[in-house]
Amino acid sequence: MNKMLQFGIKCTNIQDWSVFILELSKKYIHMNREKGKAVTQITLDDDFNVPDTKPDLIRIILDKGEIRLDETTITQDHVWLKGVLKFSLLYRSDQEEGKINSMNGEIPFQESLAIDGANEYDTARMSWEMEDLSIGIINSRKLSVKALVVLKAVIDEIYDEDVITGAEREGGIQLLEDKLSAMQLFLAKKDTYRFKEEIVLPSNKPNIRQVLWKSVQLRSVEMRLFDGQLNIKGEALVFVLYEGEEEEEHLQWMETALPFTGIIECNGCSDDMICDISYDIAGIELEAKPDYDGEERMLHLELVLDLELQVFTEEEDRIVADLYATNEKLTPVYQESVFEKLLLRNASKCKIVEKMSLDKNQEPILQICASEGNAVVEQTEIVEGGIQVEGTLQMNILYVTADDRMPVASMKDILPFHYLIEVPGINDSCRYHLQTGIDQLTTVMTDSSQVEVKAVLGLNCIVFEQQKVHKITEVEQEPLNMEELQESPGIIGYIAKDGDKLWNIAKENYTTISEIVTTNQLPSEQIKGGDKILIIKTVG
Image (cartoon, rainbow, N blue to C red; front, side, top):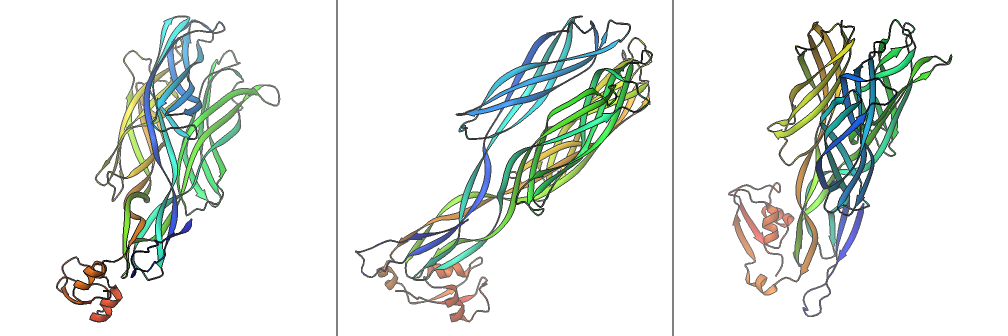
């Protein structure tokens, strides 16, 4: 957006000073910045009774939990959250038939995070981390659930930063221009992507009596901006452990990979724009349902992703860095502002190869059923040449044993990883965003007590360089001190020093660069130390 601003001073007590109207052309660059953020740690703790329809608890085989944020409300200086901790567990029961069972539950919570300056018109970006989940047996009909959760809120604000791109003045004006490369916010939006699929059991699998355990994991998620739309693709890895209707084969499982694609409308966008995207799983529904013959042989999957998009254009502008006139004193007023430009987009791959071993009291592995992994970035640091990433791959493996009393068991481990994302030219002031996901994960038995884990993590990083620019905000106009000018010599001989520029020499002596070049018959506007320059005063 460009605007023309007029400055002028009406003066009646100085006869020799004419009034010159100064017109400044301004451009407004649309940007966003962090307004405030807050982090809090909460403890969720509750006891749960085993439902009457479920058998007694003997031993917990596997558990997991996740946070679902249902409502976010912003008031003055506060962000209010409502959500639930959802947990599931697979357990060994006291039954001889149907030894394995499961249950789930949830703990609701409300929390407030203090952010100075927040108001009801803001929107917040929320994230969470489950630092610890502990589910223990109190007795055969009761269990305790404790979780340590970190909640984070970030509020951004959108604003316009103006720069002066030109100036006109009736009595003439000299301009020094500079180049500015800056990111302009084109689009900021939140959206939702839904993926629905009907999964039919293979013909060699029995009907579903009861789903005992389920998981849906994302693999190789990619998002790319094209003309007018954001293209999404990836893979949903679905696993189900269930109790079959056939009495001789109670425990069954099925695993399948479902590719998905989708489109999010982004009006006006093009593939040469810069896109910063965050995504999180907002909800997963995986339920058994009857097929067309009325038999429980289908699974209905609905996956919901919450997306946050920021789309930028790269602007190249010529801005006025300095100005003066030979017949009036013009004093620019400066202000320091920060503009961002893209330093790097990087899609790195971090490979992990580790071994997991059973504890001494665990049942030996007969066959691996399923593997779940969760990549958690615990620390990032800007170092020389890049960003150092430290994190863990949290692994859960469900496996079949040879023990009829405990037909399935699990093993857990936390596998560390570290990776240097190479970013030439990075410095401590740079801003970056990192999105982490799992591209590949395989687990292979090496023997009955050990599993080899191979994983490829996707580390998608975008880095913005912060540019501090001393920009002109306004120009003060004053008459020249004619007495002082008349006392100064009309012709000056000057020997250039290292680092001198014709602009500064011309400005200090109320002449122009073109006058100096013409008078001295210079081949260009470049000078070096030791050059002898003749300066003829053009005013006074």
